[in-house]
Image (cartoon, rainbow, N blue to C red; front, side, top):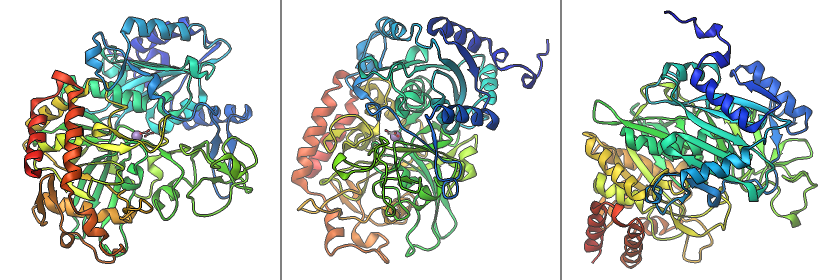
Length: 592
Ligand code: OXD
Ligand code: MN
């Protein structure tokens, strides 16, 4: 029997599986009202007006920042909470030492206790969403149930949310990731983010902050998706995707994994330096990348998101002009400061002065930064001047190179190339970085962050490394793998040796030339490094000797590093693939 076109169906009638789950959640949470989000601009405007009326959103200066709004979170709810984030698999070993673990029954009992009756007096919003272009075979869908209209507005920017996603769920035979969220009382003692990967479900309580509450992002597109990707033979990674067109008109796409707040958004939106004419840069994604081996033996990537949830501090016309221009209209700001003119302001903006701090108090430098260091902007990818329609390509884009990186004062050179895929997996596994404000906890401590996935891999890292090796074995044309470090400092630790930002195109251009077999290199114990003459340095402003310094390998430092990497791999016990120890042995042999 033919079914009626779903455009004529009301939202709750499109997928019986979604409707049944919504009814079950409503029974548990006891909301006063229910609202299904259809994705229309009228619905977005209605939700925004509700928040404005409740003073939970403030309009910004309409002539300089049209359709821009400010939200302030609870002062104790400003970042991801890794210590309260759990992976609930039946076996603890399957979550691995890289995750906090709880048995699924215990996790559900704990969360259901918190959710019981928590929406009394509130509205339950149902947000069907699709991660990836709606018509892409690589996209996956979810439904977030939340009692936060702010979350709905963010999800509407960050994902393809609404009717079309629900229709795709129905077409996918009712398969979707179930994400249940409530801000609860925003009490840090009653705050948990739990993942049940085998059930494709997430329960998040007690936080309204992006990474904890926009469940399509870190929870679904990384933790649940990485688990799903392992069973289905693909990769869900914490990577930006950027297209680079060289002066000959050839475009190559690269995927880059850097830990949080290490400049992924800046690289994704890079503006070539004037001294590199003819280069063009296109942003496909700035945070998450799903990659599948294609029939041609290459890796093909989509960005599952449709917007940016970027760190505001440090964004200026000098550091990231594209981001700065992107967020001049139609943008939701969270926890930034305000100027006397009611414009958003943050440290590193390079102009203007704060009048009101992120808490809403008159600015006083004695109270610390005016904008919270993890204050954010949420904005549609379509507003980015470097946006490319390839971000909507259902087939994705082919990846020529994978680039890992971290924030390291010393040790890691500006760029080096792994010897092959297997060595590249070791390079990724060994990624380490100084911590930043994106997560609660001490800032500036070096920690291992394999593939920049430490907070996001939904299963044991030992198995995850093996999965990477398995994917490589399937690829006839595997991307080359590199490692970069923009953050090397001089001996006195006072300043960065590499200018960064637009000049990062220089080592990336070398990487693309390596892929094309056109660039020279020196072979070292850790891989292939450019010699100073292999990089395009026309117009580069750098201190004498700095380039040689950041293109050098210090054997004593690297011996210590490899010993640490070996010990780190040991943390995953018998799950760590033997092949990675072989690679450590190889580097150590070459260092001696
Ligand atoms: C992010 C993060 O918000 O990685 O993207 O913390
Ligand atoms: Mn991120």
